[in-house]
Amino acid sequence: MDKADFAEQIISAIDGEEWELLDSGGPDSPVHGFYRDTLLELMDPYRFFDGDMSEENSWDLFNTLQMHLEETQPEKRDVHKFMIYAHMIRTYLDGLPMHPPEKVKYYTKARNGRAEYFCPKKDDSAVCSFCVARDCAPLYREWEKEIAQTAEKYGEKAASIRKCILESGFTQVGIIKTEDLHFYEEVRKYCVENACHHFNTTWACPPAVGTVEECRERTLGFDYLHLFSKSFYLPDAVDWDSMKPAVTEFKKNVDELNSRLKPRQNGMMILSNDSCSLCKTCTYPDAPCRIPDKLHHSIEGYGFYVSELSKQAGVSYFSGSGIINLFGAVLHNG
Ligand code: SF4
Ligand code: SF4
Image (cartoon, rainbow, N blue to C red):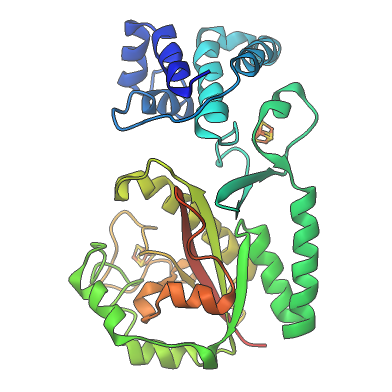
């Protein structure tokens, strides 16, 4: 069956009043925000669906979910329909795990131009058998190998940092000796031109992080730059707004890494993609940062070409069309 026809079927299975209810979205709406957003995205005029899918499998999923929800959430019968269609969209149109990342922390790996998902909660239940996410066993085996190789080449400390990075949700990781890094004044020009709209707005970006020379000196105070990245499958991303959920998820993973490593107490530093949005309004430049333990300088603001870093660390910069890789780094000693 054509995916576009399947999308049309779902659109017409929800009547006008129900679409209005979804669209109104207020706090009284019985439909959870995740299901509502997944359904409403179907109405986005810029969404196009290419390719085919199995109609039979999709209705098998429909019936399986219906039985599952009758059993587990009989009190929410009014919204079962929306939940089921949202799961069908995730599985057959978006190719994404059924549960949102806030509910289940799955890992993403870009391989051969495609995103693969691994879910620590995958079990042999009927519902999970339809989900695109695989169980984590093959991923954990890869990690064990990587961690052992890191220990052999860079020592136990680097290996334990790598383990924390992987467990925090970053599945692409590589190490560069800081003496091999290059810092480019010209990269700072992109900040000054303010294409990202963050220059001179928070403690995480230039000019607050210092000159490129000061960033270089700070970086060279450490032995290694441990680069990490996470892939996001966003085939319909056309602008900054459509990438926002990916950046938010990436930042959550960085916060988790921060809690595991406690970099300030342990003589390390985390650099992160993008700026800082922890507070509604940043104190910059009038008062010191409110949460210095969670403040991460922007990796781009240090004068690196991230494409060069990824090459040096052996981490893919470009993983295929529709896949966006976001980067960060841990600076640490041996
Ligand atoms: S594998 Fe199962 S638990 Fe994990 S996201 Fe998919 S449906 Fe949810
Ligand atoms: S933690 Fe708050 S005060 Fe500090 S840089 Fe981020 S937004 Fe600004």
